[in-house]
Image (cartoon, rainbow, N blue to C red):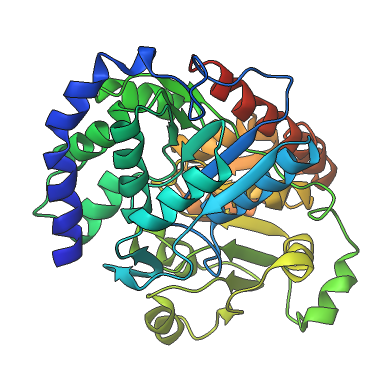
Length: 381
């Protein structure tokens, strides 16, 4: 709790700092002293600062890794500033995320040695705070992204902390950025309703080569000698993911869970019939998606849900609640079953054509997502 309190206090103390710089951001030059933001069409040096990084396995890390590969394939140079090689402390109630202690020198070295044309701060942890402070001190433009409903996350674990206080802290953090990138229109509108400015879209994509339909019997290679239909959940096992809403359903066949988190022990004890596979990645994860009959997404708070697109690209239909994340990603009900009755949604999803799921996912490419990211860098002039 002390680390969380420190985070909120630090953010509150930055409010005066943000106001002092807000009026001058448009006059700030790029990191190399160039006027405005980098122009599209030329090779750029892009520094991405993030607290979320390997060995963490989550949508933010996967998004940033793929972004780097896509940018490199287009001829740009990418460097990451992460918590690696630092003394770290675990984020309260989320120990997989390690917050770097005193990361300032690492970020200074990255800026001075790499001399980036653009700086993107991906997370609001200690790496992000340090990078933000350095950029403001030096008059460097930077962009940010908003990946997680942190106010919901905090309020779920610490009900005595009002969501308004967390939104205020986050608004202060992002106010100094030339642009704050979000994955969906509804999240853009939501942040704007909380007073966030310069919010722009940066949609997500899916690797349709890795995540693709496969023969169902291929699942036996992974030990999936289990009764069908197979209902799959992939993600973190923690309270905000609402996993027990899925595991408690009376469904035919088998429930399969892929992922780790603080709730795993409790959930395994409460639901002994469920198959827990732990963390899986790469081709093994892709095979599990393709070998399942329905992907179940019980979260009510996720802003996007990259796993939704990974399931659809594998030809696996989705069952979810009709809430912001699934509604934004899925758009068209014919490739997903959205219902406040999650049991009904799971059964309805069994009737959805797998070819339709794959066709939908093919329109969501990482190439388009990367081009949008580059446009956002250019629009911050």
